[in-house]
Length: 416
Image (tube, rainbow, N blue to C red; front, side, top):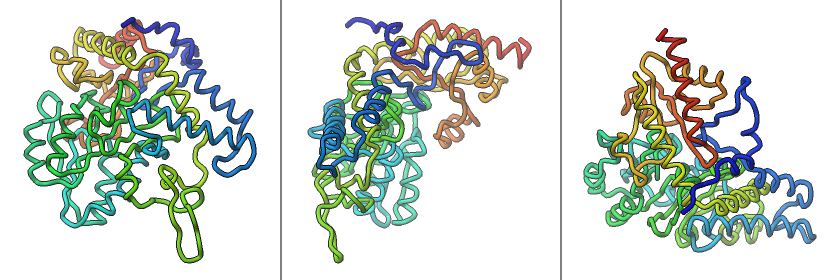
């Protein structure tokens, strides 16, 4: 397998040729949102310029073209994640809305008083708060599988909690703070043996690794377009077809119906039953273009490139005094257990101050609790952490710029 031609790839991303505060942009916040290649940008522009029309409604050429492009994007996504059919691909606003929709549909119908929902301590708020709201509505219970001292899922504790017979097990395929990559297949298999349904939050994995939702035994899988080179405002909820067929719709209105009378309505076929009203058509088309771009580069190559960057980043940080890294220890980090997310702190410097100094050098990183407040504040025992996250357009040379920026921050704040 050949390495990525990163310099060639970078030319596809117009924002990477811009200056920020007089410096070339070093974008290290792809776990929050990714940058967009020309292919994606142009697909959205082309839609608006040449065939802007509503889908499923018009008996004219540009409406038919719009409908075809929208369905083609779903077929591309289905193939990209290993789903059986685009009927299993429900578009929504983002990963958060996908999980909320599931809470108001499948979970509302299947989880009752005193039923258990099992999560983990590494979850994003999007995979905690909807279940807390459901538990309040239904009188259900929530438990959290602990993390090990090395920031992996404590499988002993997880198996012990499975003995409590959860109705739902929901977990992050990878932590957006720690970079920990969970063994989704094993976690799912154990959950199914315990009689649970499985939802996986794949927001951090779908953009970075080859994915087979059937192979990892996911009942439901959620992820976002904007983290995988696509437009914002589009999320994906994959669900096994038989489960989606049984679920009631979350919203009512146009397009999600088959018939409507003054007395009652019947529902459209999958996946349209869950997509009421005019959808984000251009966003879906742009996501299809993003999938095409990622396929053209090769997910295995992208994954290998990010592993190299992560290894180099961990080694770079290890060589700087006063740095604490959060996640699987460097000497135990492998391609099988860690993604290209590195959270760290510099002793004596608040992460917000560090990020501000980085911005002055043209470096974009995230600092805060990363929408994982229970993990950062209760498990890591920190008010905030700084985070670098990598993608196919990042280079090892950028890590040198980061190292220089850390030293500048230490001189400015610590006078070292």
